[in-house]
Image (cartoon, rainbow, N blue to C red):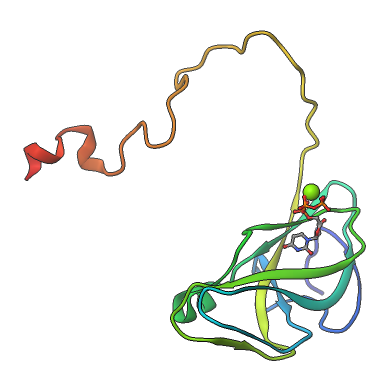
Length: 156
Ligand SMILES: O=c1ccn([C@H]2C[C@H](O)[C@@H](COP(=O)(O)OP(=O)(O)OP(=O)(O)O)O2)c(=O)[nH]1
Ligand SMILES: [Mg+2]
């Protein structure tokens, strides 16, 4: 009996499955055929509906094999499946490759990672507490190790 941390009720065929014990992602399969031309995106049906327990979220992640071999990814990665959502789980696939990409019913197109989530309380204040990082962001720490000691000109 595999160890489970959460039980998720599922309707429809193609119940998500973990390919290996210890996998974080359970494969999501397409329930329809579709061809994505290069640059196209599509909302691909999986045919399943799920009921996640309160306090959990389902995250629709891309499969690295599709990305590496075909340039196919999940456009809104990771897609968010809310615990209260009872509609069909759909995958927004995007073809960033140079060839058309065809999906057949039953093909594994993405993977569902189930995680616990915190529900936050947002408290409006006039001023935030200070921090070491402050307002620095968006590359403020440089983009490679050399940035810490040399500039581009120095290293050229
Ligand atoms: O990849 C995805 C992303 C979302 N959903 C479903 C489940 C999710 O609970 C619902 C809403 O998703 P999200 O909140 O990301 O979309 P939104 O654009 O904010 O729509 P809404 O106003 O319905 O929240 O759509 C999917 O089936 N696949
Ligand atoms: Mg939303």
